[in-house]
Length: 115
Length: 115
Image (cartoon, rainbow over all chains, first blue to last red; front, top):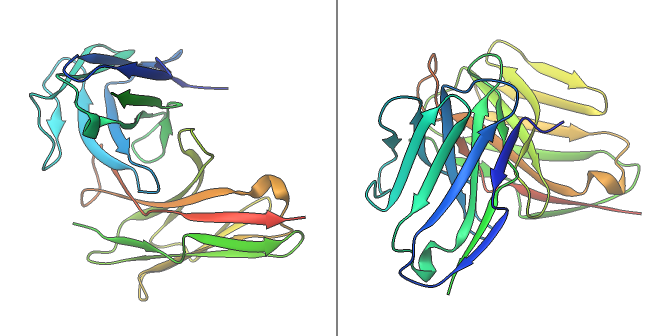
């Protein structure tokens, strides 16, 4: 069964608004979660590493003030896309480790469309 | 940073035949390499992990090889079925290993098994 959930699965918003995406680990604690972004026919690109109780680590080229990450509990990480623009339209996916630090389990993804 | 190349964007195979997908990487050799399956509009699902000291790993109809000299991994699906149609992603850890790293993905090979 699913070990990671995301909400919402799909969101449409107007340009300039902010959108929050939730990633939850089900029935286990996740001290580390990852956020990826995938454009059509492109590979998943790691955006940031979310650590419970501390600041997220962002990959080069990812604006930390635009993509706010909060990992306030061991089962929830949130990604907020602030002042979203059409170029932020993408598929956002979170993941975490389950038992060890190798294999990652991914959420079902959130499709964001900014009009 | 690692660059991962996967052999083609689309691969058509007749049902019952063996599908072989290729993953090549540059730069340093990773401690392990992973293969994931991704269906349209969904998050990736872990399939197999192979370590640098392993030449081959099998799981049911799946087989993965890892050649660190060639910097290449091959992913085989034997007795392929239409339900195997999906995009298959090759992934390596972003760091030099040993920690809780995110993954670097290839663009993926879109496999189509024709009845």
